[in-house]
Amino acid sequence: KAGVTQTPRYLIKTRGQQVTLSCSPISGHRSVSWYQQTPGQGLQFLFEYFSETQRNKGNFPGRFSGRQFSNSRSEMNVSTLELGDSALYLCASSGGTGYNGYTFGSGTRLTVV
Amino acid sequence: KQEVTQIPAALSVPEGENLVLNCSFTDSAIYNLQWFRQDPGKGLTSLLLIQSSQREQTSGRLNASLDKSSGRSTLYIAASQPGDSATYLCAVDSGNTPLVFGKGTRLSVIA
Image (cartoon, rainbow over all chains, first blue to last red; front, top):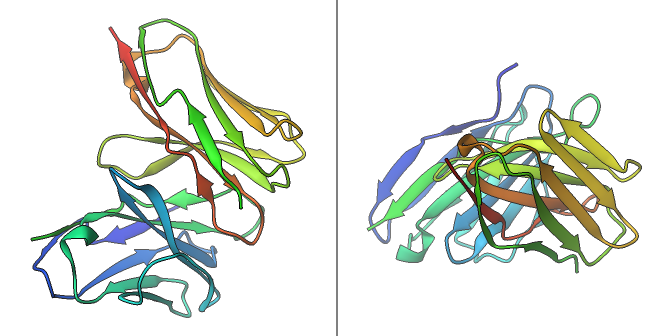
């Protein structure tokens, strides 16, 4: 059974640019959550999607947005990148038959220069 | 608002030692609690999931306990090995709300 797949693994962008990250959940999982991890702030919740609807949203500026497609794959977008957006972005999926908690992907390391 | 605290923040032990990592949470109305491991620069690997109706879960050398009434969970690692060196994170699921994480315990097992 394939795990949670995040692409790309690494990304280097310039300030002011925008970026799109992708997350493919475990087959059958309908919920996808996104987290930002930085050394200073730890893991911070960005948003959660369930059946293409945003179910929860964290305390991040509107530059951070996301969506979920009918096949449960999710994307998050960050516009007008700032140096402080450099972080590891993690995606987690949950749901499906039975409950097995959350499964995380390997993350996308974003560096803004 | 749920808050999760992990103590200690860092721990260094000699190989072979048994150890306990602590996690406390402020709101006992939880759905389940999950322990994760994270290696540097990597994603989170789920170690154990304890549902609210359970008291403990075991996997190999790992044992996690849950005491909802006191708002505490412990992760016990038996016979620690250098390969256990990582950051261990505790996360609380309160239902239709996001997972709330502690800041983690960074474990170093010295050979």
